Length: 211
Image 1 (cartoon, helix red, strand yellow):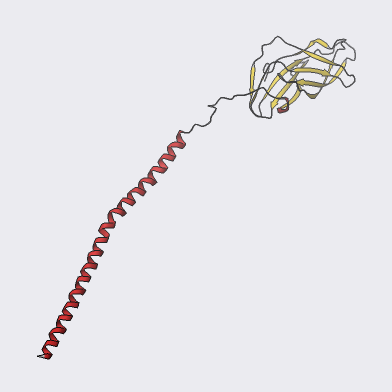
Image 2 (spheres, helix red, strand yellow):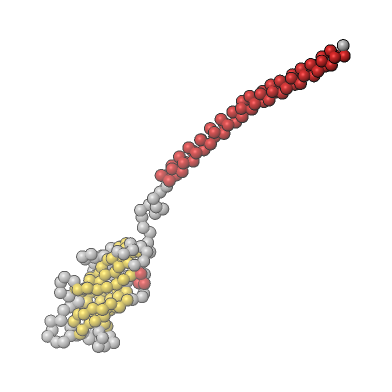
């Protein structure tokens, strides 16, 4: 009887441990099966949100870039008068006798010229000069972008007097709306005059004549 009781007790103990182990396995299996079910919606929601963000951001950036204006000025140039310091001034003999082409090349930002330049004809041999008179031509406005040029024509009387005349070697030129002048070399001969002005020395406004 004692041996039988021990055997039954042992059997009961083994059976209890087996049931406990099975229940533990079932609980773990249930937990393992439940975990993906609970996390699956979260993973799905997170993935959908990320794809939407990646697609939206480039589309928004692309639209903004394509709609941006090419320039704030809308193709228009707002300028002020050209300054003497920003103008490269030079002279060259014209096609006809008694003309000199005075060129104004803009070396600075875009600017405008309108009107008559001041021109004084100077000789190395004396302190005096001949001031050019203005012509009757209309004065167009000229806009010069960086590197662009415009011209004004100087007319002078050629020396056919038979005398030595006066050798003009310098032109002192003041751009329109400016008070500062630049001196450029030239080489012409004009008749002797007792006046500081000569009716035959005439300057046209900038932007007229052959450009």
